[in-house]
Amino acid sequence: MVYRTLISLLIMLACCQQEALSQPLTYCSADSAEIVGLLRRGSTSPLFFAQHFIGRPYVAHTLEVNDDERLVINTRQLDCTTLVETVAALTLCAQHGDSTFADYVRVLTQLRYRQGKLNGYASRLHYFSDWIADKQAMKIVQEIQKPNPPFTAVQKLNINYMSRHADAYKALKAHPDLVPLIAQQERALTGKTYRYIPKNRIANTKLLRNTIHDGDIIAITCKKPGLDIAHLGFAVWKKDGLHLLNASQLHKKVVLEPMTLSQYLTKHPSHTGIRIIRLWNYPIL
Image (tube, rainbow, N blue to C red; front, side):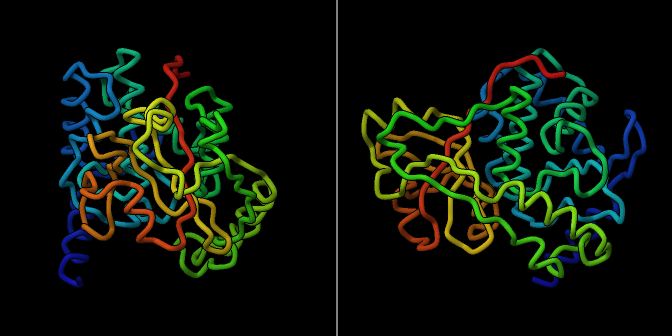
């Protein structure tokens, strides 16, 4: 574990930190080359891009490598959130015929930050419910919450995890003045309600196949105090049912889970169900 962490740090230190393209960036030339190469492949399918990253190492906290907030682009190491953002940005670029690294930087910024504007650590959308609402307001995604069934359950948010565990976050530990800003964002989320599909209703049925599309973003709801979403991935239908393509901490890489999503959720008692988010083919600002 120590060796793997050391290697990851050395890789990050070897990367370029560029103040270009009108904003501060952290990336390697390998990242920009891979992104441009993918955009030139001609596909507009989120699953095409997601499947490309199968086997890529799972590494947490890749966005926490700078003292100041920068747009970090790292396609070599992914966690569940950065996999979703990377694939979404590639898909949106491809759908609109954008094929340059600058295009990708612009779209990823619009996805990762509140109202698409990088303005310090607190402008990053740390809670995925906040991400969904902000991107839906920007007409980039649509959260699917009907029909009922299968959306038979309601999640009522009670968000406070980051502010109550500030020491677990590098930026909050270094800058305690940010904690009240994060707490304010948590209070704005608390009390909001969203429909979701409980895990005991996830089955290989015509209703579910019509409701959830290949390539939809799956956000796994949870009952861990202070949190809204435990994990993210992409929907993939196979003959035996719905599967999750995700950056897996357990497998230590991006995988298409061999077990069905229903089986996967059963193995995680704190997981309660799934919310479904779909990319809209809207012009990106």
